[in-house]
Image 1 (spheres, each protein chain N blue to C red):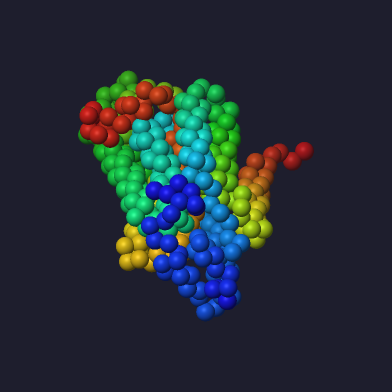
Image 2: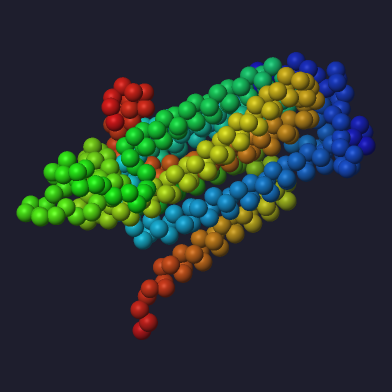
Length: 285
Length: 110
């Protein structure tokens, strides 16, 4: 890959001439500035979109701080840690893709775009595995109650001398088991309210996943355009730059989701290893 | 008109900003990597109610570094800076008015 602008690109501008300018622009420079401003204005709306969700999260966390910590304690911090570094590395590779296009190095551009797509797909793969583990543990908000038979099968929940079993939510039972495994004490915590945390967890990470899927789709599209020779004009690097801005924004959203969702509760470095072992099926969850 | 402002040796229009050198990009990545480790160290610590504030501070620094260097906001034109500043301002208003309401509406009337 070219390391700076002075390195001879594989396809020079002298080979292809100046990049075409849209009929509604005065110059190539104005066209590039318009592309940049357009993507930044889009990111402004995105910031307010995620900001609304984070504002609601803040309000409910202030109301139910211990319940949110309990919910966080039940999450897989190992997968979240790995995904943090995967996404951070993809921010580097997409930046290098912009550089390659700027230098007119289409081969390097294709390589960095492909690497960014791969890192994004690995992120999504681990995220899917995390959701699968969450569903397997029954950490899904619902109004479903345990049957009397199910409750009698768990003697620990029966009060001594009680003649009748009190109704209990399936979610609360599953959460108790998950927190017990995590070594988290649940005294004084309204476990039904922890469902609020999980609503935020699924919606916020779900929206992030949707943005990742869109980003990967656009990266694949730019990889196809690269193969078709669209980026033979180095000035067209601005389109790769616009997509990289979107990708960096998705990374920034994750930078806030990690502490708000995964690090809100008590976790240890050892749980990172355990979480990764669970993800890879090396230990049962 | 485009041809007259076109820089033949680079293929870029005259006046277009230069991208930062790859060495700077790598340095930015290392800094972001270290900040991510710091976020995890803070997250695994037992700082009580200060933990969320410390984590948000680290996240804010990470975002600033990423925006200034990876997103190249340093060299952005004034219109882009206006867009970014307005979004932060509106986001601030969203948090300010929402939290002002919810933190004060249950106060006893003296």
